[in-house]
Length: 91
Image (cartoon, rainbow, N blue to C red; front, side, top):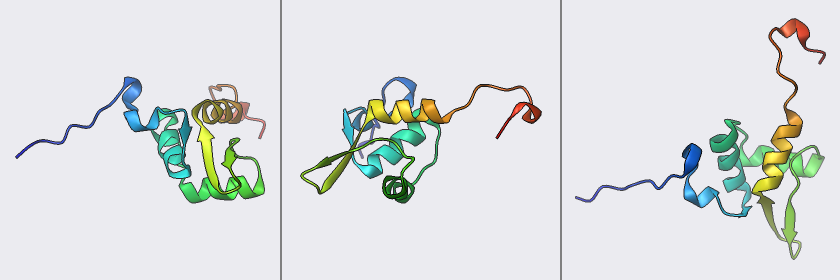
């Protein structure tokens, strides 16, 4: 019986999530793997509709894709400054 080997790259991110453009499901998985953020595909869909989510591209008005760089930038913008105590938080 052959063993299934999961190909991984630096930081434990699977190779299939390292491509330039990701589907909504792949973007959800990438955020979990790369940033430890558990956002479901449906949450990304809601953010796409309501606003406030990562930027995305639409191919011919149908297929939605996310660029990995845009996901990384969005996460960086969402994170606040590091604090030592909750009393330092303003929001």
